[in-house]
Image (tube, rainbow, N blue to C red; front, side, top):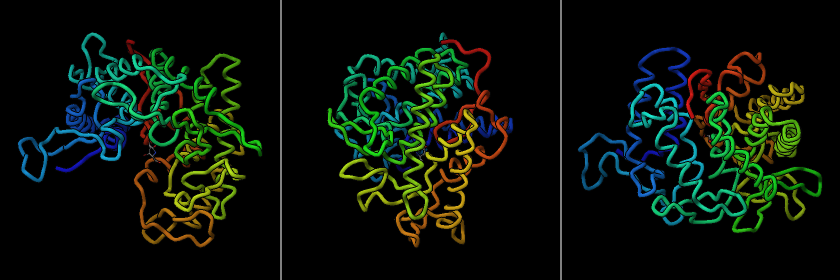
Length: 394
Ligand code: DMJ
């Protein structure tokens, strides 16, 4: 009993179990992934089929006054007007596609189109119907009415992995899921047009958008986008490919600057491009680093796709900084302020440090054929899932 996040259970546990199954072939990981997947399904019982963010995973029939019944779902208390979050309901496709394929179970997939899980088809249907302001996807959607609840757009927190899963869905289908590719291309075009900006000092960044007004801020979370855009560019036509590779390199450079301009050589949670500030946190509450992976994730993709040695140099700077400022007796810890050389520790080693940060650093320094980008996509928690080179049907 208790609250579990649909999104986190999917990306961390189901993604982890699926990847372990594919890497070891041991049935137990497959059956546990399927068991857990089934427990998430009640979250989709909403008028639109857009899932709610929180679900109770307790055993059936355990309802009491203090604990809700298994399968009950609800929206996050902090999400405006009972809304569901774009990055949460938009980050299911990779795992659900594998659950469908592994189970052949119509609970996960409509028999006729076995390849696209019902839940994902439905989410795409709602998103294609709703009007998108200037082609952008806001972060909060009502699971009851299927309309936006607030016009906040961000490629960082609350939006991020929605975009990532569109391009990776297409790649994982061996480039057959053309609907996902079109959604990705259209979304990126709107982002390029309305959110990509250059600072006075020449740094390219992706701003956030609040009801038409730009917030000149980039979160650490948004730094994954350099890698994503490079990955997508690889498969675009000549003109787009060049433009997107440049954009990816520029954004990754900006994220590197956010690290280089700090005393610890680790980057803050958010950095700004206003009031004379360039790639630095301006608020005390945004100066922390919790061992997040997004910057080294982009270094890894850019390295594999360009082999420019600067990405390995930048990755090594991170390794040294982690050793110097984050290593503690029992492991590694986040720090409260990247702008002091004697930072205090937050006493927490987030699970994404092992799952993502260290894995991406490892992949940055090993040979390209270790979990090759030709054969694997990484889910948003860096768990590798195989590309279906054979039988996807769109
Ligand atoms: C990870 O849990 C995932 O990458 C998620 O998509 C957002 N970022 C965190 C780590 O920063």
